[in-house]
Each structure stands twice: as structure tokens, then as C-alpha cells.
Length: 215
Image 1 (cartoon, rainbow, N blue to C red):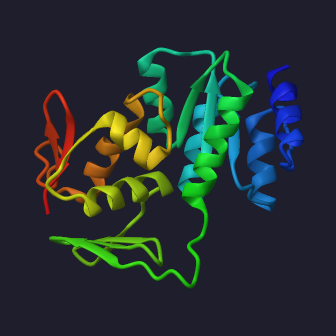
Image 2: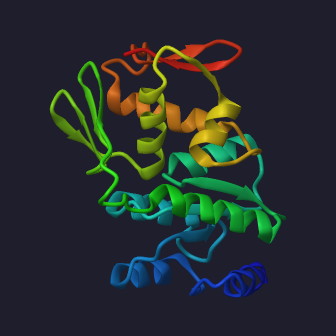
């Protein structure tokens, strides 16, 4: 029923929509043709949505929005840890889902050739915005589209204390939502760019506020 309502709404908004009954079918279908965005339920027959998300994230960077009836913080964290770009709890407004789909599509859209962007650097970190390549000490590091955008925002605002609500608004484009999304992505970024993620040198916690990026 949820898939039917969502697909009808997206069709009215001008999207081409394909629904499939289970995760294995979805994985096979996307292997043949990768969509612009995946809206993924967690509770699926056979392979669950979280494992499907892990498999997609291991192979590609397609934006993934998880929808689930499980709304506890630990459930959202698990979903985001699997590599999802966003997590929505049922019941939800189709209009809000539409806004979030547009947001992830904007973030993952290819850069225009006539808008060259600088390489952002801090210590051993280099973020090539044009090529969408992250390197640490000259070594390529894989990052999801959202991790890349979050790091770019940090690099453009060094030394500034940034609260989670600001990061959610500026990087995700949401004026509301669960700030646990930010926390999970920061943790994943630390694991990729910090020598010691438990004692980060670059993405520092500002207690009671959020984070500060130190070059």
C-alpha cells in the first residue's frame, strides 16, 4: 500500500517510477540499470532492506532513502550506518518524501562544466570538488555523496562552531529532521580522514553545540 501511494505521488510529480516486491529483485534490476534515487523499505521478504543498502553502497553511490516503521534512534543510526543518505519513519507525508528526494538529487547532481570549483585542502586532506575525489595523504578514499558534501562544507568553514541543525540545513537541505543523521555521517567521516578517529584532529566536537573543523 505504501509503495502504491508513493509511486502514484511521484508519477504525478513527473518521475519515472519502478516498484519491485523484494530486495533481491531490486538488486538484480539496478545491476542492469542504476536509478537516480532508491526509496527503500526496511521490512522486505527474504533479504532485508538494511542488507540491500549495504550491498548497493559497496558497489555504487546512488542516493538511498530508507523508509521504515521503526522509529527509534538506534534504528535510524543502523540505517544510516548501512550507507543510506536519509531515513524516514512511517507514517510520513508524501510531500516531505518528495522534498527529501529532490534534496538528495540536487546533492548528487553532476557539476556543470562551466563552473570550475577549487580543490579544498587541509593538512593531508584534499577534496577535488570538480572530480568529486577525496584523497588523504595522496591516497584515494571512497566517500558517499553526502559524506563528500559534509566534508566540503567543513572545509569551507574552518574554525567555526557548527551546530547539527545548521549542518542538517546547509548540507542536507532540511529545515527539520533527526540530527542523528549528522552524528552518524560525522563518525563515518572521521573513520576515513582522521589518523585516530577516537581522538580526531580535524573534526572536533564542540560540546553542547556540534562540531568545528580544524585545518
